[in-house]
Length: 220
Image (cartoon, rainbow, N blue to C red; front, side):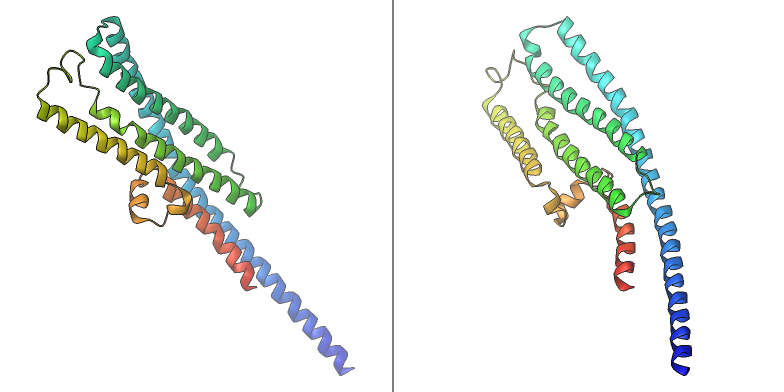
């Protein structure tokens, strides 16, 4: 009889413990969801702002290209090529900002943690890919002001050499960033600094919040 009473008491206590753990997990999920929503909300504001100014930038670049084409001479070749490349890269960025905003709106915080993590991971990867592509426009900022009328045939050789070094350095730098800015290199301090302001760190924070739940489950 005593054994039966002991077993019943043990079962009752075990049920209470399970209920307490389930309640704690539910409360933790609500807290984490709130933190993640706040982080994603700030990212939505950032992407919306970038989209707004990105569109304005494209309009300005498009106006410059139209102006150069309407008054075209071979002297505009450097300008047209450079600005067109910058325009194309920023057009890609604007399209990607729209895509990011759509992805952010599709996150279902009532869904599974695995699904939320997958969407956040996809978003983070896309942000990294976009940022590395954005750096590819760097060399064109060193060539847009050149004119075929005087460069390189009429420019002093020291200036020509200096300019080639600057442009070459910009090409190498953008290539190096494109090659090394990957998920595997996120621990690299330089890469992490180059990604500052992209929103990648905000997504990582949201992902880390959900890791708390996984760690809590493992401790149960």
